[in-house]
Image (cartoon, rainbow, N blue to C red):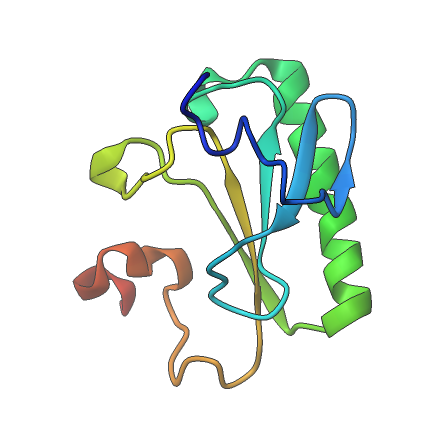
Length: 123
């Protein structure tokens, strides 16, 4: 896509990549080591991926976890994708967030990804 930020990542060198996907550091990380994993082909969101692309992204998720474990030793992870504007997607090229979590980075982490709707996080 001509205007897609992730289709034209000249300044971002991939940390890891395979035939169908690549991973790079998020430019606005929420924690140390926060990576994005994207398909090389333009696909608007996760539901537009082919099965081989999903497999390639899953392989990179595991490789990226190992990379982050080695570099930063986090205590946990959040994995997520925003699909659609209502879900918070701002760049319409599928991207999976791999967010390392560290003990004490949030006073009460209970609910994890449920925090996308703050009143529903704690249950």
